[in-house]
Length: 109
Image 1 (cartoon, helix red, strand yellow):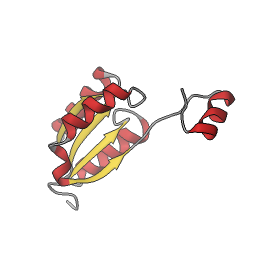
Image 2 (spheres, helix red, strand yellow):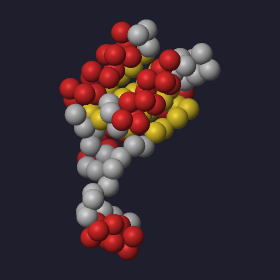
Image 3 (cartoon, helix red, strand yellow):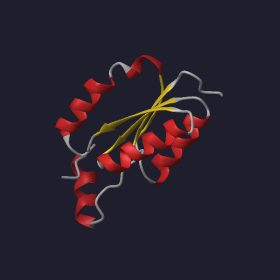
Image 4 (cartoon, one colour):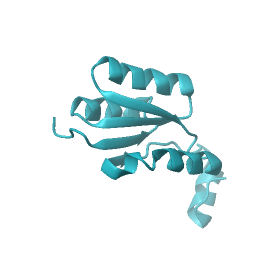
């Protein structure tokens, strides 16, 4: 248990790479904050971790929404005391125009 009593906040934590990070870090003893847009998927991942003896909580947040992120930061402030890992897992839009705009001014909107 290399990560015993540490906290990992994992965005995109309910699917794909984020789910893998959440699961493996929990197996190593970390307390997991699963951050995801979809409440059902996020809660399911947190519950899977708890059923296997881990500690997990779910925070609903769309990281592309500024208000959601502000709310998430307020919710997470108590978790930050023991934070060892923040995993940001997200996918940008697939159009070339979006990539061009992101390269020009740092926004994908």
